[in-house]
Image (cartoon, rainbow, N blue to C red; front, side, top):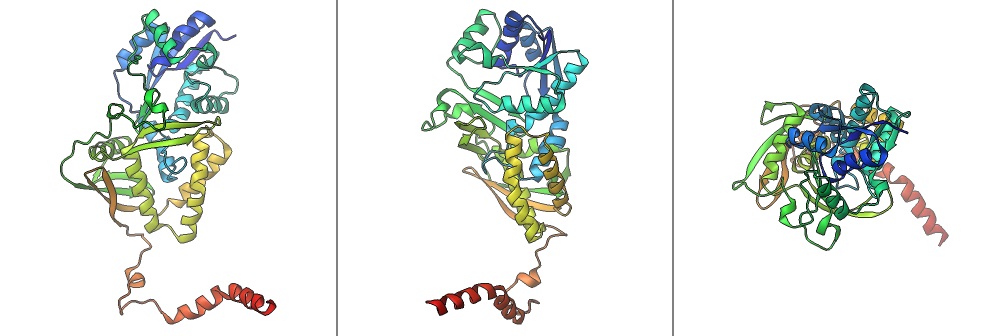
Length: 397
């Protein structure tokens, strides 16, 4: 039986109740680990909340740059969107949190790690599979799967133990946020017919008035500058998030197929993620050779599935990373985005010194250097198999 546990602590309802519940019901010492992944918030207040819940220690790890460079960057290069829509906001954060859980468990001589995920969610899979990949000897405790409390019960439990939480019965939303975006669940959002109220949004409230354009510079598949201003990836994502979100663009409302076999209505806000993924994919259209582009497009959904399903540290994911990294050698150039009201963001230009677009081949002007006479033989040979089959069919009728 575990005596000391490191809990992935968000400061929200479930993890705050989990601290007290594990202390009271399991008799363990709980160390709360908070990972700063760019979600913002008052970290001192969150540490105080963990202490009020009964944690013997609360740790805040600044993992913003690590998250951006080691987790978001590979997914961006892979154009990873689950079911073609969701840019893996929470999915990408779980393996980096698991990495720090394991490190803290080793440093504090803990027997186990813990998370606040429900049995219906995807995050339990991501936390536990990642932990087992990194430290198969550590026990994993999932109190929310054990205690049998409803969300209303958890709110009452927190009130009974004087745990200062921000969730109330009147505002029951469950929110997860990092620098790649924001997810909102629970409450009225569980009805897929109900329109999300404006109160659930924080990153995409329209405040801009006039159209604007921004030029994103990429080097080897990664954005490195906005309008010529170079900045670290985490800061760049935040800047694009702010600009694009101010036009009310970047919302996703989808019914998603969870790994555990149920459908779930999900609301996402991710203006920066969607804008950068769109710009990156557009630059690839200009710079990737045809067969490579088609094969990469075929593998991208598989890549996204692996991340979504908690297999970040799997051999197949590592092999796909190698393919994606090789594909990005010449994805260098600039993409021009235009934002305007109401809620529009689009690519309006792209250029690259290593781009494969050649005007003298593509133009229909008389001076082009494409030898039209070569096309006749090419088309004849290309269609030879079909022509042979068609002739045979005609002779047998």
